[in-house]
Amino acid sequence: ENRFVGNDCGIDVTGDHVSTKVSLNLFEKNRASGMRVRLNAMFDLTENLFRGNLKIGLLLTGNFAGAIKRNEFCGDAIGVSVDGGSEGALVGNTFEDCNVGVQIMPTGNPMIRGCMFYT
Image (cartoon, rainbow, N blue to C red; front, side):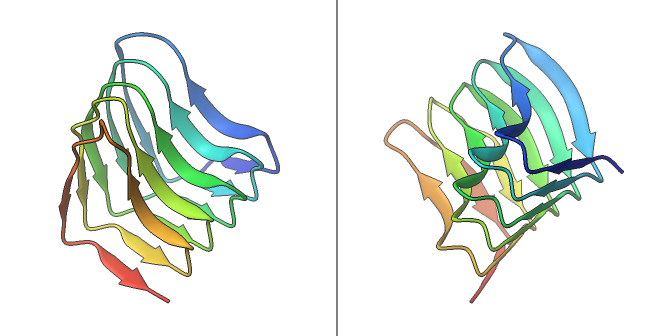
């Protein structure tokens, strides 16, 4: 398990056509976002904990495809923000005490299935 705590951004995916798996990590109290994806990417994001990130837990602004599965977003200002033509699937995620669980911007087109939202 990797811990990304107190950074501007924990992981910043800026390369085009990145394909990877990100799992079992902690993204906590990062100032801008726990993780952001800014260009075309295909990856799985599974069983991570995003907690207390000051702006956004997971920011998708590129053309993202893949699965965001079984992650927990706890106390982030915004759990997930989707924009930029992203068509990934949010499946079985938990959003607890976020100001906004999932923010869908004008060009975002995610599939959301089986997620739980708590206050």
